[in-house]
Amino acid sequence: MKIKIALPSKGRISDPAVKLLERSGIGLKDNTNRKLFSETYDKDICVMFTRAADIPEFVADGAADLGITGLDLIEENEADVEILEDLNFGKANLVLASPEESEINSLTDIKYGSLVATEFPRLTGRYLKSKGLLVKIVELSGSTEIAPFIGVADIVADITSTGTTLKMNHLKIIDTILESSIKLIANKKSFQEKKDKIEAIRTGVKGVLDAEGKKLVMMNVTEEHLDEVKNAMPGLTGPTVSKVLSDSGFMAVHAVVDEKDVFNLVNHLKKIGARDILVVPIERII
Image (cartoon, rainbow, N blue to C red):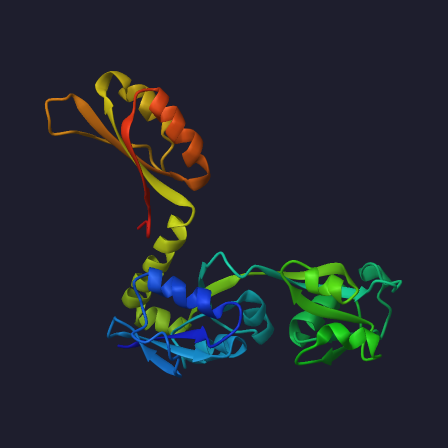
């Protein structure tokens, strides 16, 4: 049974999503021309390119078995899907913002019947209602930031990753509705009927995620320095030690370590007797 994976056809998460699949071993046969459907090097997997906003609904309805899209869009569509993995990129917040000169500085300043402009009417309305605020939602499809300055709204609910765009448009954040990131999602029926293949894809993706920021450090060390080296090596489950097939009396030691620790670790290992130290990139950890 073929697996269809829905990816955004454009936008900030499109290229990272394609690259993640490629690093997972699911490369597109033709990545230069993104058609509606693209074959991969696995004959049982194909990719469907579409709008990121449509992916939650397509996966929920079974038009696609898997999808990569933002939590904000999943929640906005109220999509009944299985969230398999947080993909650790595309982090952004759906926030409420008001003009810098406005007297609205927090939720308590929002008055009954205030106008709220947003591309996320369900999420925004649901959140404000949960806070006991009765407002009127003005649904826009873009240029939300301008709404308060042309009399369309009092405040806006918009997605931001750094807040820079809001500041450039003289808006201040007054509250956060949702912290979002990019998710790997599955159709619930497909997850049951095609579980083995979907789990294989999930394993490949998770292997890439687990390898991010990690390096494999390998070295040779004499037995007299082995315990000191072992104690210095963090590793995921401790270092792996094996005997070097020679008469030199050396042992081979290797471990997976955080990239941020490599510089200091390598210098420390060298001082305590390690030699032939190699630092190797890791593509996946399964």
